[in-house]
Length: 166
Image (cartoon, rainbow, N blue to C red; front, side, top):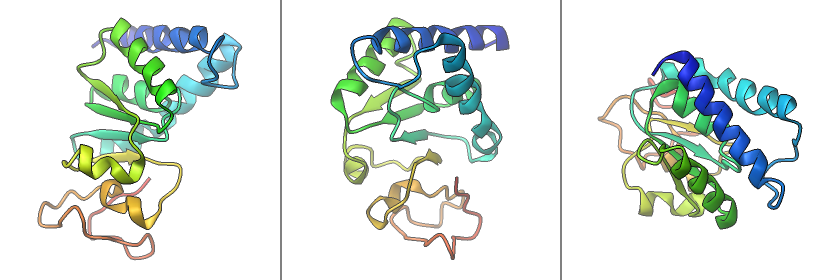
């Protein structure tokens, strides 16, 4: 997809979220220009890390209104899973994705983070998460070497060889 088409889709998604935000709290930012800067531009700050991660599923845990997940998904073309335990938020995000015909590339889940391995047994290859807990680590680590099992725990202070964290 051309860069101008990608930016247009990001803006249309943002507009959809800001419209829904008038009745359901998805973001504290209501000004369109400020939202573009703080949601789209800030989301794309993580683009180099996502591009350097092994190809495959990208997971945005604690996605809220779909940021940074949607802009990063559109910029990279990766299949993406947006996760937030607030079902109402994920329903609105899913509706916006459906309206923009993005549901094949970007999906949502309102499962609790610790239940994700049950719903999605495949590993994610790149993850954005606000924090890490031992219960969540089997879904979080980017492990490019397939000889490592997905349920092997690697504490942040002694990561697996070749693993990336962000």
